[in-house]
Structure formats: structure tokens, C-alpha cells
Image (tube, rainbow, N blue to C red; front, side):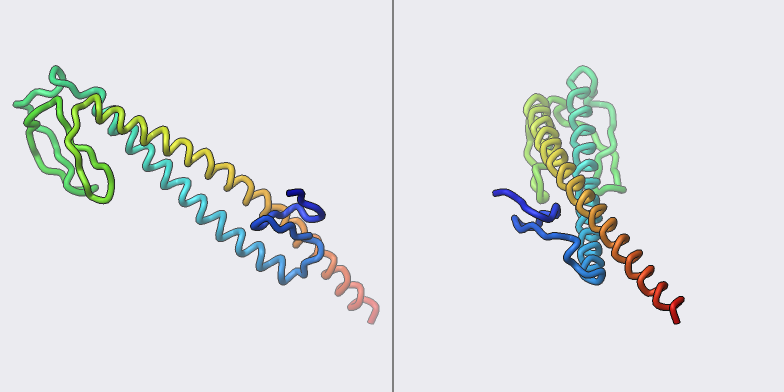
Length: 165
């Protein structure tokens, strides 16, 4: 499917930006601003989730029966900001949050594999989203440039009429 004329691609349909009015370009710019903001927020959330999985992987890899003592107390997270003291019943088995509030008991090797898979999956999602954000940002720049040119053309046209009176 070849694109002809316009450079902005929206759902497979090319739009010639020069044929749009300044008001239409402003609406397109506003929509693209919203999309870029939403996608950027999603990107940040995916990166934060990946960082959490990396931290979980680090903890699981560093934890073994030799480094975790059954007698040593640890802090157990109940929420993001609430922790209670606890002790490990079995240092070689951990509870893994598999999503939507479900936890599965796994040995540390299986837990590490789970977190590695999640990190890899998120890396792919982040990479894909990064490409989409860049494309939308480029589209936004093109719309802003055409809009700026139209506003300048209208301003010089209105200015010329005002000085001729």
C-alpha cells in the first residue's frame, strides 16, 4: 500500500496537510499532543514495571539458602508503603506475584526464569512503543510546521490589508 501526497499516515489513509485549514490543523495538533502524552505516560509505566521486575530478579538471584538465614528477620511488603517484620520459612522457595493479585509459590530458579521472561517481554513492548512515540512525534512536528506556516501566511495577509487602509 503506497502513500501519495501527504506524509501523515492515519489508519492507512494519507492526508495532505497543506490542504487542511489552520483550524483543522489545530485540531489535529491537539489530538496528536494527547496521543503523544498518553503514549509517553504508557512508556514510563512500562519502564517502571520493567525496573520492578529487574529488582525482583536481582533479589531472587542474590537470595539463596546461604545468604538468607531462617533466623534473620526481613521486611515483608504488604503494600507499596507498608512493610512488616517477618522470617523466611524456606529460603529456596518464594511467592511470585503473577498479576491481578495472584501469587504462586516457586523455587528461586523458576522465579528467576519468570522474571527474566517478564523483563524480555516488557523490553519488546517498550521498544515497539518507542517507535510509535517517535512516529507520532514526527507527525506532530510536521503538523506544527504546516500550522506555523499557515498562521504566518494569514498574519501577513491580514497585516497587508490593515496597512493598505
